[in-house]
Amino acid sequence: MTDYELKQFISENKSIIIRTIWRYVRREEDMEEILQEAIIIVWKKNKLFNLHPNPKALLKKICINISIDFLRKESKRKNDIEIINNIELIDSNLKNHIEYERIKKIVINSIALLSKKQSLAVLLRLIEEKTYEEIAIIMNCSEATVRTHVKRGRKKLKKKLNFLNGDNYGK
Image 1 (cartoon, one colour):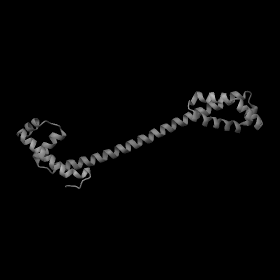
Image 2: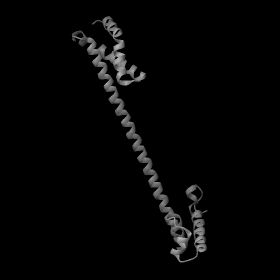
Image 3: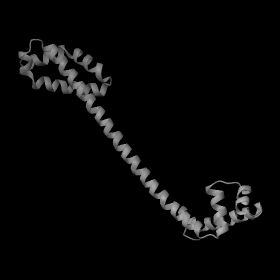
Image 4: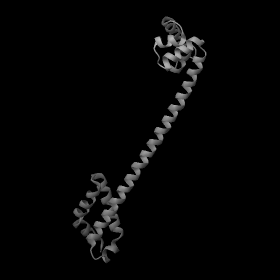
């Protein structure tokens, strides 16, 4: 085919090309991209069209194959993006976990600096979420004493841990 005949052939079959591509991609931007690619391939394979017994069928097959290739690439790209997002999420979770472990260690060390009774009362109340009554039974003292130990322990912890909120350490 001459260049003019090829242009004529493409113009006459443009609706077939568009319908074929549209069946696969269903997005105008993607369809236009695939249409351009199909025309480029048809232009490059001009000699093949001269030899083929049914050029319309060949044109349709080229459009189908390009559309399928496009969808595969798009799917792979989406999977790659998903993998990258998962890696970023894992990295973020790891950083959060490392930060959590660091803070946990600081809090445990700070609790260890409290008196025995205060540290026990604070651990039972804040970590194990026991009631004052249960703590009083465990520590063998009154509820009022437990409340005092928890209150004083929390106050000391707050003072030691202010730096975690951006304040100066041990204010």
